[in-house]
Length: 127
Image (cartoon, rainbow, N blue to C red; front, side):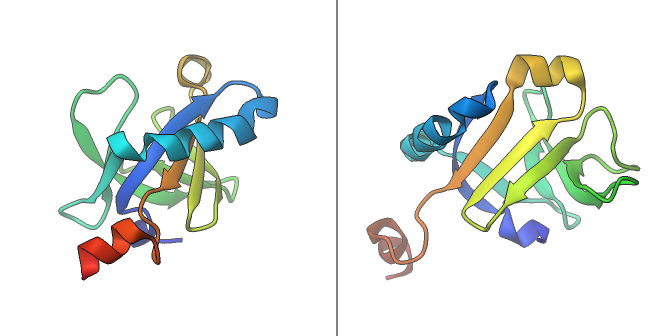
């Protein structure tokens, strides 16, 4: 996984109970008409929002001391502002906030890539 894999448009939804994961993934896919955009940062990271932030900030993929992958600001991982990358298969990204209070408010996030290669939307953009 590298930061380039995250750049693009994503449908976004969140859940609090693992039993809701499949339903939430479908809901995230439905959000592509109002997609969340992950941009490329000026120094090699990605532009995303931190919890409760109005503006995007450049975030990095980081390997934590626990050998898990995190997405967050510069510095050692895990940091309270980081998100743990629970799973990523190129099409679906699932993240969980490290800070328990933030995790309680925001839940586990599911990002589903919009306009995957081979779809009509992707063909319009490349054609």
